[in-house]
Length: 189
Image (tube, rainbow, N blue to C red):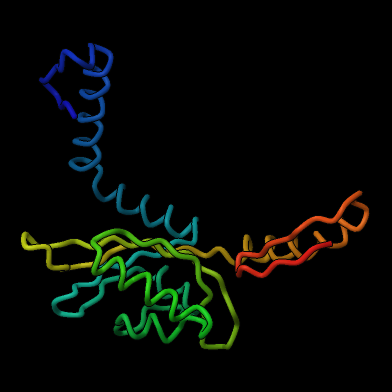
């Protein structure tokens, strides 16, 4: 990417102008309005019901947002959070799949993105998505994992309701239709 003062010939003057403007915007936001940026980011994360975390894999220390803990049913940050706490909150039917996805990304060096059910302290069930990325040292050793989580309960409830209505709607269909679910079960109507 080209920054201020550079004009790559292959990109033309339009790209160079955009790059100069982008760099000026970055400098302004990070320099003069850093505090505003932090407040804006917190506002956006809260509005989207997103939480973030950053876990040091060497020390086990996890830094996270209040939104992260809220996604697990806690109105305030807990004193500490570890990977085992995460696993303990996952619905038992999802736990092995999520742990395998995390471990595969840890060993394989790639991101992971999953949808899962979490059980809150009051026993209620909620759906979240999580996306994480590992930071590695020069020798490839994983040092940190950081990511975001979001509440997708409303969307999942809508999807489950829509899927449950399909058999009734298909009764009028002129020929049999095969139905498949995310769990792999099939049936026909």
